[in-house]
Length: 448
Image 1 (cartoon, rainbow, N blue to C red):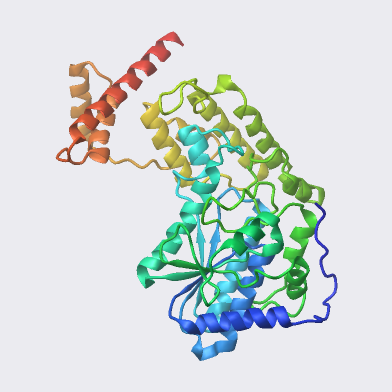
Image 2 (cartoon, rainbow, N blue to C red):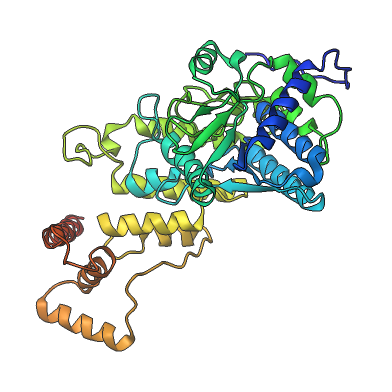
């Protein structure tokens, strides 16, 4: 797909009917009730148009603008670095200008929790990189963080209106889906998965040329220009990746606003577009993404038992996860910017400690080799005296002190109370698993 035609000059808009109609709908919708608005902002052209219309509406309403507007963006933490920086800078500018102008508008950037993150899943749990048929990334990295933010608004205010930049002419599938929705008298439809959330699509009937014409006309209401946005669309091919609230949204793999790690598509045309346009420093990321796809297809690097106990390609083996982490941190050192967060490294270590790393240091030691000194989180804090007593007890029982520490940690962290029905049985099973893993680790150490 060729990059869209972008206005090089500032053209005169022949017809303002679409803009006028959209502003009138938004004006009526804003005054209709006290529900707060959440504007989904990805940094792409469509969500930028919606946000610009809303920003101008608040400026127009002045003292009448009283109900809150939240500009919600999502950072999967594996976004293309140039796009991630652009979105964060734009959010900061929007936040500052809204405060200066006294507008009831705030920005919020949501991220997945460590257990939902890309590296948390691949390195911590051993998930294979996503495919078209196992697209675990969308649910964990996009839907859950965004929905938590929206649900927090509904808990506070009772209800919310989501403003999305979806348009009928984006694709035939999207158009049919939008036209099939039942709308109320104000053009809203209930979100089919988020309770107490209504959806508005103020530019649903705009064409792509209308979008570019609007963005190329006049000034940006929060300051600056859209020149970087125009440049992004000139550089890369592919579609726009919106904020995602449900799995009905198609995969945005390969879009110019997608993840640099995306393995859902065979070829990341967007990243290649950036590289061809002068972003050569992104080439190592593209190579690493291709490397992950190769690893995914090598059965010898994965367990032959799934996590549910059934036979078949399972998670990456411990040795594979250690190797990928080492390679990722080496890549991080070479490109010169952070690719994995401290909280993700702590989470990975906690997963390894519970599964195969009985010393509880492997991930942290790998990170330390690359200058990433991570302070481990521990649920069990023992004084020197208590630690000595624990070691003595372990020796007398002829068990490893680390095993005893893990048993104490298991009891305090996962089973603070055994009064609930079934808790004792689950605790016994957890102990058995811990001991089994310890014995397996000992056998592996003897064989090596």
